[in-house]
Length: 125
Image (cartoon, rainbow, N blue to C red; front, side, top):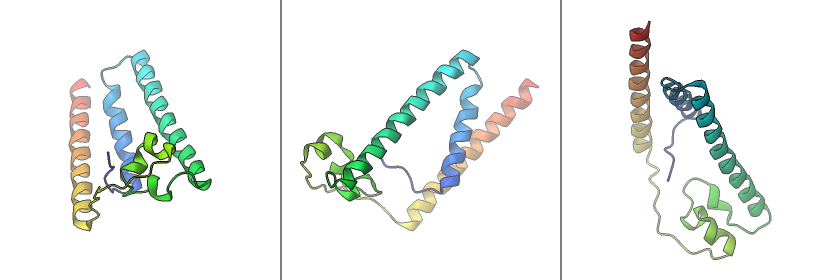
């Protein structure tokens, strides 16, 4: 999975929108359970990313493996840590136009989600 090239503030704002959408039909205990599950996912990702940077620092993993446009091999822990750094024919589209299109599409989705949320709040008042 490759994340779209969107500005960091927009990326963070999308998390806020998703969070607000998720709380609507959940009890406090359900919100707590989902929130803890998401934090666990985040901790796994953070721990893996940090450890991979340690491995890069020690010269045990290719430097580009956690950067944007990394080879498929660099994204695969089984190959990366076994020392088999095969080549990949993966191709990443870095066109400015496609990045702008992705950002625009993400913004439109966020606006629609916020409009839906506003309408739901109005109906419940």
